[in-house]
Each structure stands twice: as structure tokens, then as C-alpha cells.
Image 1 (cartoon, helix red, strand yellow):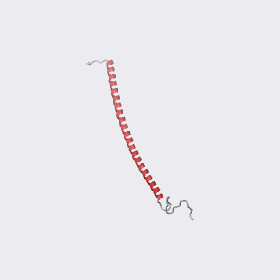
Image 2: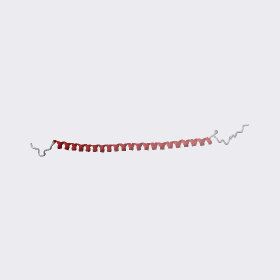
Image 3: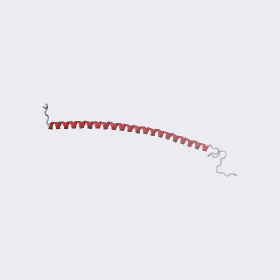
Image 4: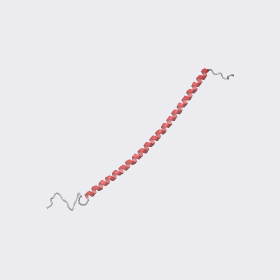
Length: 103
């Protein structure tokens, strides 16, 4: 059979090397694009979860402040009751004893 375009093995080898280099560059570019997109998605998921955990922490701190306020309010009530209590109060006006001895 007669070949229409005689190609020498040297030209064929050069063409195949160029083709291999082009395919390799294309595949490396696609791999880089895939890694870039995958890294972006992973970073987005991690940042979203971090933001969610910070929101939960913020709510927890708010509840802690409320509980501390209630505890302080209870202590204020306890102090006020000790001042105006029945017989063991601090300022017992009816039976005030200013260091005087009973006769």
C-alpha cells in the first residue's frame, strides 16, 4: 500500500512527545482546578461549623450571665432578709443591746 503522507519515525516521535506534553499539562491544570474547588468547599464547611460553634458559645455565655444575675439577686435578697428578719436580725430595734449588761 502506498502511504499518502510519508512520515518519518523521527517526526512521529516529536509529534507524540508534543501531544503527550499537551495532555499532561491539561490534566495537571484540571487536577489543580479540582484541588482548588475541593479546598474551597472544605474551607467553607470548616468556617461554617466554626461560626455555628461560636454562636452556640455566645448563647451559652448569655445564659451564664443570666444565671449569675439571678444568683446575685438571690444574695441581695438574703442580705435584705438578714437586716429585717425576726429575732436574729442585725438591727434589732426592739431588743437593742448596745453593749449594756442586763440587770
